[in-house]
Structure formats: structure tokens, C-alpha cells
Amino acid sequence: MRDITYAQAINEAMSEEMRKDDSIIFLGEDIGVYGGAFGVSRGMIEEFGEERVRDTPISELAITGAAAGAAMNGLRPIVEIMFSDFMTLAMEQLVNQAAKNRFQFGGQGSVPMVLRAPGGSGTGAAEQHSQSLEAWVAHVPGLKVVIPSTPYDAKGLLKSAIRDNNPVVFLEQKLLYRVKGPVPEIEDDYSIPLGVADVKREGKDLTIITYGRMVPRCLTVAERFAEAKEADIEVIDIRTLVPLDKKALIDSAKKTGRVLVVHEACQTGGFGGEIVSTIVESDAFFYLDAPVKRLGGLDVPIPYNPQLEAQVVPTEEKITAALRELL
Image (cartoon, rainbow, N blue to C red; front, side, top):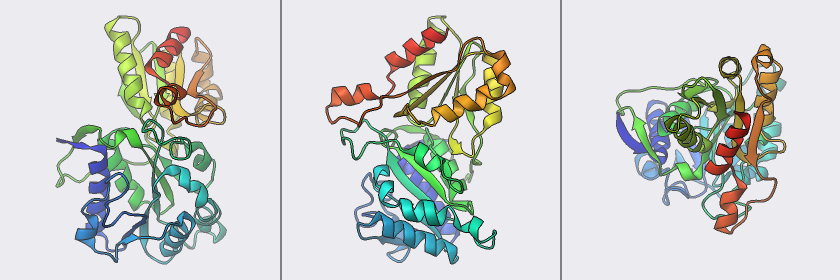
């Protein structure tokens, strides 16, 4: 194992898969010479050339449509959307074409493409560059949705997403790009299957179910509760929203009897509601000692002001308060 950043892990996953498979191409704005808006693709155009690492015009609709068409014709495109907010401009091709093609042609074709996009707040990028829109795409049948929280998970999950024969939306939260973590050496190839949650911390008194950059925040709070001998808290990182590892969530709820769901996205209509229903519609309901609680972001656009921006999403203080209510 060596420590590398989340951004490096994503770069390695793409580069390693491209070395193995000439059908993989990479499309996006400023991904070539510039190396990507967040530096994720540095060095890739030098290795793979302009035919396979393609700087595109500024049209998310055109980029995504080109990728969907290429995927239907034997290639395996990776698309980078500069900010996940701009998926809104690509929705027609992503939702009405890529997600539907395999179904509408009776499985005769497939659309093996990955759409990568950085999302989330915390960088002072204001309301049009800081949203968390995972619930939008998770709502669309035919799309798989992944949000890794660590460099290890980012690399392993992206490899599985690239190898998948269905369109995968791979969301990367911007504040994680410079976070370092242990990842196997390059020669130790590994992947993480989609649809398998990870217990990041085992506990017996309460379960936190979360994903993305809320995972390290929840782990920090859980460790504080353990040090103070207040509670032994389990933290589950779902890693993939679609497919969702329902069994892991239900088993943990049955074990601890109390559940808090935490996500950065707005609470109203957020994916947390789906997690809650998964638990309360199962036999785990009869094991609960308290109602399942959600803690999401406030239902407001992301402010530019840094103090306000920090308070829009679940903070360690808000997570602590919610846990104490449940306990």
C-alpha cells in the first residue's frame, strides 16, 4: 500500500484501464493539455494522444451524446463533466438516450459509458458550481450511480464502472480530491464491485448511513462518541446509490436499533428518503428503538459566503446533535 490522493486514484484507474483496452476513450472540456479543471487527468494526453484523450467544445449535451453514440458502436467512453451542475445540460442525452437504449432495443445493444463529474460544496464556487444532484440521476432507471469517499474506493469502483456494460454516473466530491489514503501498488490490480456497501466503522448502539465527503465527517464524530464513552456507533458507506446494497443497511439497522442517514444534498427529495424507506419497509422496522432520522443539507442554493456555505450542509456539530437526539 502507498498513500495517494483521491484525484491520483481516479487518474490511475482511467490510465490502467486505457492501457489494457484500446476501445476506451476519454472526452471532456480541458481534460487534455490543461489536465482537467481539478488536475485529475494530468499526463494522460501525453501518454494516450489526442485521438483517445479528446478536448471537446463547451457543450455538455454534445459531449454526452457523442459518448452515448460511441458506446453503442463498440467504444467504451469516459466523459468528464467539469462540474456536476452541468449535467443539467446533458440530461436529454443521458436520461432519454443512454439510460434507455438497452431497454428499448430489447438488450440487443449496450451503452458502456462512464460519466464522471465533481460535485458538492465547500470550495467557494457558489450556487451554480456546488450542487449535489445525485438523487436526480438515481431516479432514472438504466443509470448506475457511484459516489466514493476514499482513494481506495475511488480507484476500485471506477475500474468496475469502466468495465460495466451500462451507463454509470460517477460522482466525485471536490473536497476529497486532495485527500490521501492507502491504495495498493499499481501492479496489484483490484476492483470493487458496484452495489456493495462498506462498513467503515463497526458499532452496536447506532448506525450512521452515509456516502461521499460526509463519510470522514461522520467517522470523526463517531470516534469522539467512542472516546467519551457515549456510544459505539457504526458507520456505513453505501458507495453506490444504484445498485443499493439494501441487505447491509437492513442488517445494521437490526443490529443497532437506531439509524441516522446523513448526506450533503438538500434533504427534501434527497436520496436519504430512499434509504429510510428501505429500512422501514423491511423487517428491520420491528427492531428499531427510535424512528429513523435524516440529516441532509438545507433547502437553499449554496451561498458564496464561506460562513454560510459551511452551514448549509451537515456539520460535525449538527451530526452530533442528531445522534444525541436518537440516543
